[in-house]
Length: 191
View 1: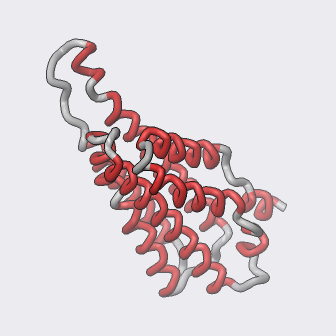
View 2 (view 1 turned 180 degrees about the vertical axis):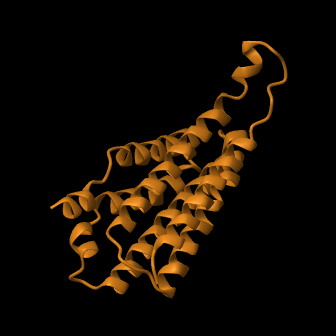
């Protein structure tokens, strides 16, 4: 089956997830700067999650540029990814509200970890569907950034019980790693 419906559906779901996140913001209790400052931690969590969702959307887009068609396994792997991404607003809101407490920060990391795992499952399903000699397989090569991100999430979740602030810094570092776009697919498709 063609990939267009999967791409359109995924784009729509990610757009809704971002919309839900911004709707979680509450109006400041007052009209001065001090009232606005109380939203600082929540806003920082929102920015981090917005960037992470943007990274997933961007990488998903690039991934499907190298894909010709999809099958049932790919559809389910994509739904699996969207499920974990749909939990980002909940984890973001909880961490934003209780940013200095261990469990919300660790749960945020667990959602990011599972999202990264689900993305890897999607990539593996696409590789299985297209074969080892496909354009996609050539474009992906080794996923060094993905493996590093996964290890950082594994380290950050227990770190949240020692220092929620340091765990948050690890999540920010993963986002920074991915802010430099992954051009593997573009290079192969452009050649």
